[in-house]
Amino acid sequence: MNKSDFSSLPLSTELLEAVSALGYAQMTPIQAQSLPLILQGKDLLAQAQTGSGKTAAFGIGLLHKLITRANQTQALVLCPTRELADQVSKELRRLARAMPNTRILTLCGGTPIKPQYTSLEQPPHIVVGTPGRILQHLEKGSLKINTLNKLVLDEADRMLDMGFQDEMLRIIELTPARRQTLLFSATYPAQIQSISEAVQNDPAIVRLEELHDDKKIKQVFYEIQKGERTKTLIAALHTFRPESTLVFCNRKFQCQELAEELWQQGFHALALHGDLEQKERDQVLTQFANKSSSLLIATDVAARGIDIKDLQAVINFDMAHDAEIHVHRIGRTGRADKEGLAVSLFMAQEAHRVNAIEEYQNSPVTIESTTKLKLRENFRLSPPMVTLSINGGRKDKLRPGDILGALTADPNINGKLIGKIDIFDNIAYIAVERPVAKQALNILNEGKIKGRKFKARKLR
Ligand code: AMP
Image 1 (cartoon, rainbow, N blue to C red):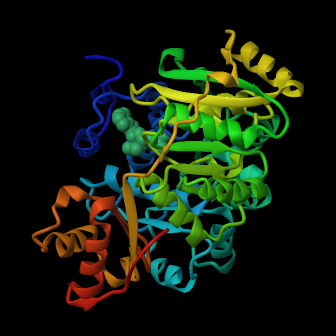
Image 2: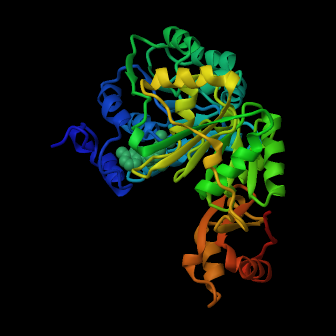
């Protein structure tokens, strides 16, 4: 038996079944290193990023030995954003699929609190949420965590960035002192160390080497002159033609400006920054993830924690302020055996940042001349999909199958032309291949879903 087989762990058959049903053949490195310790009940301080499989690592830990017949909250996961909390809950539910009656509840801000009170009438076994809202429930007495035995701080660095430190610490004070605390963080600033010292008990430390396998990420740097940033970015898009690209800017106002400029140049670009409302954020991320937008322009804070696969390129429109953040940014491409591309633009006065990256990676970087970038005539980078939205969602008991069924009832729409269907509380997004977008929109507007009429529109 290989030591990265899940079956090498002392897990229940229900968990082993769930893992294999999810198609997880082998443990990821973070899982292989941390799960044996987590299952022994040790506290853990782990440096791990989105995409590393960290959610399943702590998820398996929380579900292992969960007593579902006890009507008590036994675990709490604190996350920086609602999106991450939703992703975590989803993964936990998938892992708990063979464990009937496991109650997992998501409690986040930005959504009405009243329905949460109702859900809390029966204590959930596991609570996943954002610090502000969790604290509100604790203060009101609607949530009790005095029976909790496991606490997870997920993306702790980002919770600190977002100013959640006080809430986090107040919540932790309300948990029993005898508990297992698992702290996950993508970066490792001094503040994380001090939080760990304050709330953990002799934690085991797992730090995965952050360096990526160079073979999987082609990194190219371009030195630019003042005023050449956007032009060079566009030339890089013409040259490399990536289907989906994450572009990093250092300031949030730049994201919107750049997205608008790229629209004018015929690109489908969306900005993701801290000023968006949750609904707008959901929409932007959905459009990018379902391949109906080619470019997502984001700041580090906004982009952290998003789990988007198949990213072909990362472009550093602005260089990151430090090498660790740079490596973290570009690690979002080149996953799962696909070669990724990382393009970075720098000005002469930023050369020290390039040197810092070389030092951090312990290898020289490739700097190429911008003259190698070629603008193509009549070039278009159209995303393959278009997103349609309908004004109904989870609250209307809509499921992806209902929408897919309504569309494919039309003999002209083959199920293969429909992409991801994402359902939120009051809205659903459907990705369809561009050539059938109009037809699909008509079907949704004219027909019924589950016997009801909905209004559909095409997102730009
Ligand atoms: P995370 O880092 O938790 O956001 O996980 C990234 C993705 O990896 C998720 O889509 C998981 O479903 C997936 N994943 C987690 N563990 C494994 C595994 N052992 N093998 C394959 N995929 C996994």
